[in-house]
Image (cartoon, rainbow, N blue to C red; front, side):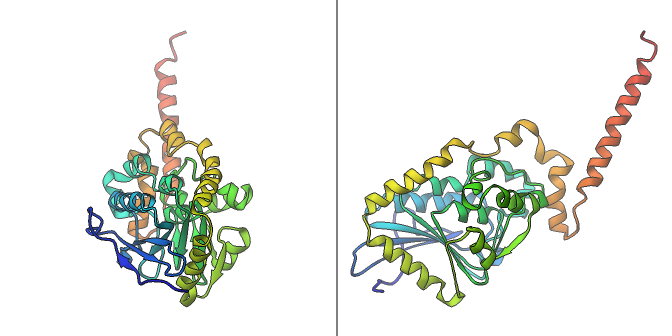
Amino acid sequence: MSWTEWKQVEGDGLDNFVEILYEKKNHIELGGGVARISLNKPKKMNTLTLATVDEMFRAFYDANHDPLIGVIVIAAKGKHFGAGGDVDWERWGLREAFYNRYPHNRLMRMSRKPIIAQVQGYCIAGHNHMAYCCDFTIAAENAIFGQAGPRVSSPADGFFVPYLTKVVGAKKARELWMLCRKYKADQALEMGLVNTVVPLEQLEAEVDQWCEEMLSLSPGCLEVLKASFDQEMDGYKESCITSAAMYPDWFDMPEGKEGGSAFVAKRRPEFWDIRQREAEMRQQLLDEYDAAHSGDE
């Protein structure tokens, strides 16, 4: 393949990113280019915060308005693609703002350009559903995929949850989201969660090959096709609509706090102990009410 070297994008506030690295390169023979947005927090397993998504938005905006860019690659520095939202950050009450106001998957849906997720190592929770919302996912042999919502008391809902049924089927989608199991790269390939699996040392070269194939095609047609495929997402609610109605104060409730607290403390969550205490409290209130009104008749 005939590519220029990756070059960090400069100017217009695009060269002062902290949580991502934004680069572009061009195909010398074909003339088109690729933009790469790399999550750049390897010491924290590239966990996501509002700042991460804000920086990603600015990079996506630039890439989508650059007429010479034909493909966008989402990658990550370090050993892992990412482990979801930053639990320490979420503990300070910012999780609701992150998922309600800044659903990072919408960057995939709003993008005019095809997107490839380049995955190595752990691809868990928010990173997993970000990857499967991309047009293509190319995985290294050491990739591990999975969700973690019920494990850490994060009641994710919105278009990106049922959209997985379009990717792997309804039964497997529910298995991923509701059991929080982890899946190796070959299992992900078998269920259709990824497009292909290659040795880790060949991962970037494989992504280059896919980019080259797309750059050899009509970019306008690819944009129309991407928009057509992405339209099926529009029938789903944005994020947290159901959970907001059912549990408007979820993150202030014991169960809402328990998952994150247990994760940080590295202990087993006590979800059912909490439910048991709540049931006992409700019964006590009912008994007190009955006792107080026993002579009303």
